[in-house]
Length: 328
Image 1 (cartoon, one colour):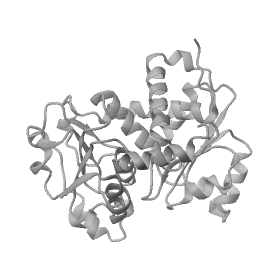
Image 2: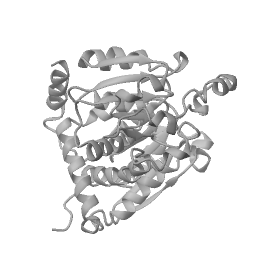
Image 3: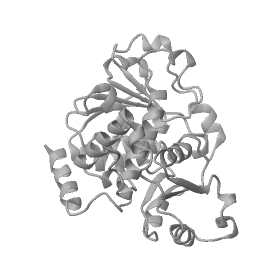
């Protein structure tokens, strides 16, 4: 298969490298084998967290968030603290010297001299890649504009692996804002690397998935996909439903946002059409695209997903720092 050929290319690129000391800018930076090892470590930490409570003692994580975040920033900080390390950083750009005109390169050079690892969110696409070029310590992309959000993808993959017990042969519905949703772009890339997955792309025409995902990801990997306008027409075929909010911050025209923000709302009526083992995911925060009445449905996994995110980040940090031994 074509996807197998692409995966062999990933393996060839990284075969001489260890995970320790590397940057994570996009999901493709890790091979499938490396992802499997990371998820196995995350599962081990979940089962016995006390054994990993001191593995990063003396290590410092910087969280540099040039864009608002609740779950991602706190998840990184909780992950490092639970590993015995410490954190420093800022939660909005006004708290950093960039407000005085300092370049991102100089900020990264400075912070890298204080810490062992950096997690950064920036609204500009490509900012994380630029940061990695000026950092002597590992840089983790915590979201760069509408481009990538690889640790959310690790969270999503760990959730799917844990709940569905497999990573291939799944029908995955991506619903809502597929144009600006960086979590969607990253997940589409990641799940295209596993055999037999099929995508159903559910969005209004204005928020369709970017052409590059189709031309550079789906088609080279031989991935089957279809575009749909109505969620209720396809929800019964799905193994995974990945809901997204329409992101106001990505729109230049507020009227366009108001017109599209309620395009898709998942409620109990639509859930009655779904499989009994459907897994509903959402990167959060949600606005009103999932009705609160769905929260009590056992198929709603988005709050489990939040906790899996902390464990995925714990595993990632320990691997990048090379301190993943744990207590025996």
